[in-house]
Amino acid sequence: MIQVKNLVFQYPKNDGPTLKGLSFEIDKGEIFGFLGPSGAGKSTAQKVLYKIYYDYQGSVRVDGKSLHDWDKHYFEKIGVGFELPNHYLKLTGRENLDLFATFYPNGKKRNVDALFEMVDLESDIDKAVETYSKGMKMRLNFIRAIQHDPDILFFDEPTTGLDPVNAHKIKQHILNLKAKGKTIFVTTHSMETADQICDRVSFIVDGELVVTDTPKNLKSKHGKKAVKIELANEQSKEFPLKSLGENADFLSFIKQGEVRRIHTLEASLEEVFIQVTGKSLKS
Image 1: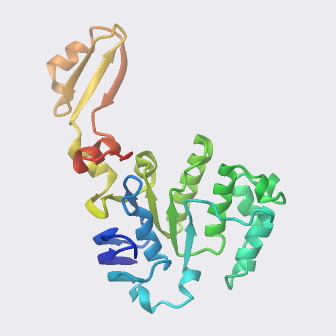
Image 2: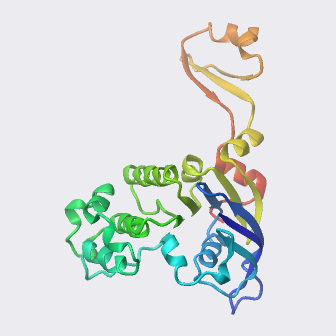
Image 3: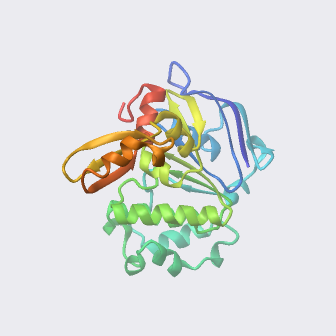
């Protein structure tokens, strides 16, 4: 669906490029994530792909066609959930969506009430957006991006500013969009979000891609193939996963007291990021 080769982009006033030869592909129906700290180039890469920035080097193809060859109909094909909500504050939530719906041929076909109900904003649909909290604006941002039923979606930090309950709901909605065959490109510094929803991820640091793989493979490669057993008497011990059921030491240990907790020692995605890149997400 999306093929990027040797993508280079430099802001006019910068001494060097922000994106330094990125190459990656996103398959149709895949949720693909760019993970990295602030300033790594995540949002810049997305802005190239949704045609905010034109002056780039390299090749970008979407659905088999060069990005340069797409005309205004490209914007009917994509939906964008920006990191910072940018609504008309004096208008109501409904009026905001109605306004943006006029940009698309099928804009009148959507069910506005159902969209607001999807993100628990049905009681606020006719309130001015200036009265919305940041989390409410982010949820409005989300349904604005999907209201014209685009094939490709770009979400930049989709759970920023959301409480845990609404963050969980937005992640589930993204998974539901994937189930409908949508192609989704997510940028985030939240490793938890990426781990929960992304089919594959790329670590990006200082404008370069360091590694691309599935979260499962990354955690498996960089973690211990072992389990840690914690007993109620405060004793704990690690055992290798291989032939665990035949390990006499393991069987003897779990008989020494009530087992409080058993957990695998695979690395978290954030731990993998630090191991692979040598960088902190907060850098």
